[in-house]
Amino acid sequence: MFNWVIVILGVHIVVAVSVVSLVLLQHGKGADVGAAFGGGASGSVFGATGSANFLSRATAILAAIFFLTSLGLAYVASHRTGTAGTVMEAVKSPPAAAEKAAESKPASEPSSKSPSTPGTPDSRASEVPK
Image (cartoon, rainbow, N blue to C red; front, side, top):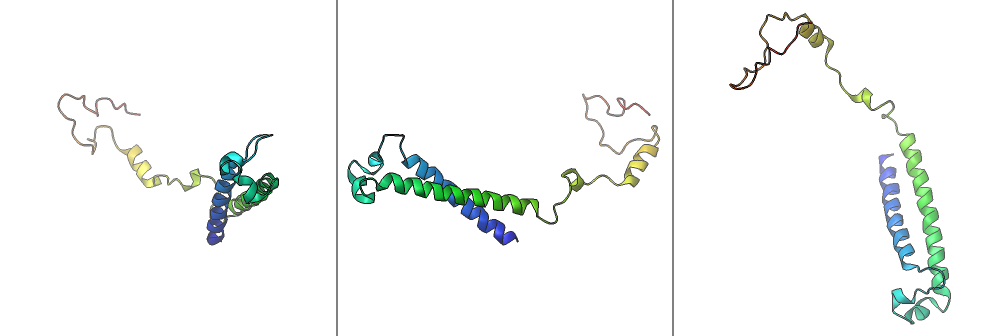
């Protein structure tokens, strides 16, 4: 299943770059592709009116492929096994025994924290017993 995701994603990226480049090659209404291919050379490459038809058809085909790969990636992402649940379910909570030990520790017992450095207030002085 993972191999299909890589294949679909690779095709999706290639098609996306191709669609962008084809759209940038096309000009607005009333303009020819002649500027992209150097003046009158576009007439000899695609024919007199073939350049607009070729680029339009290629863009439409690549847009359809892009749409299909988008649907395929969405389907694979929604039917992936092993990722059911929420993001917070993956967060590990501290063990209950450590929490109970921390709650039952008397306030007079010195903490295991490192001693405070000179010039800073003592960290135990700011602790308020519950």
